[in-house]
Length: 441
Image (cartoon, rainbow, N blue to C red):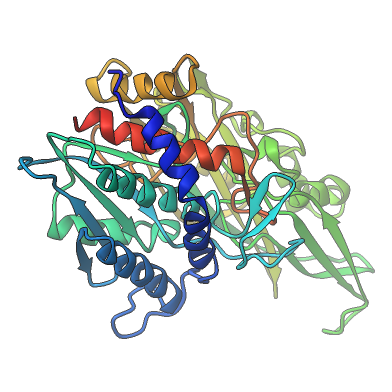
């Protein structure tokens, strides 16, 4: 597996780092949170502008670029003598919303204390930039390849992956696909997912009446602020109390501090619905055992279950739950258990959707090639990991995640002050370029 270009690749990135930072800064500056669709902009202006920027730059660099009506773009490098594209690198340029609590402008690449800060620097703009320059490095150094490479960037990963559905209607994926949308060394096992929304009629007869609750805006993030409003009567707000927590991706609830369950812990004796939810979702419990879940297996590890949304509007209390479950269970089994637990507690199920688990054999040739690259570049033993996050290749047969972060890092993905260390970003560049050289040689 060892290639002879490792040092040349390393020198290339050192020589071009200022240009790499400029492109990184330009892409972070584009607010690509999904917004209302416009003509020619299926996911809003920001997503369109980010894809257009990458399209124009990749075209300028001499790649064969294709625009899939701004659902997605691709850039292909087919060296002389190669007649088949073997490797696809799948990333996305849209991001989640910004939220509160930032110490810097989320749409400005800020370098501080060895980190880059900004929305999308780890999910997934930074890794996309690394992938772009990895391919440019291979082309500029004229590293011989027997097979071609295709970058594929979408604009709707954070809201259902309709971009890739559209792309696949037009073009098939290459036989090998990795996404820089997960963790190193190789993420070959992704837990299944359940997203569920529920509601119930709400009545509070206490003197200091709770008239509104605002807790959580998205179902796949741990709530960092739950605001409770009180009134003595009518519709005027008498007072409010804010419960502070810490945001994290819902697939890693242990990295956050759930403001909703903090509130329920204090108010569980005020209302039967609060009491029921506090029993089902105790503060500090992450595996859903109180709901009748709590499953684990040897490959996937422990499952996660988080109450991520709780809102009171008028006389209706509503909420949302994020669950990531092991590969030896099914969506039907897990959703059935959580639905039953909520219905027994007096709640109605409003929506329920999800995905089955995704697993690729760690002994496949593709996975072994990526692990060998990891060991070659970093000098560390490569291994496969399992996570609860749903990556871009979750529904792609044989697809795995190769980076962009390491399992021991907490980069505040989907939270305030999202970050990637300069060291990790540099390793992204080296790993992706060497992976292309090794897999497509």
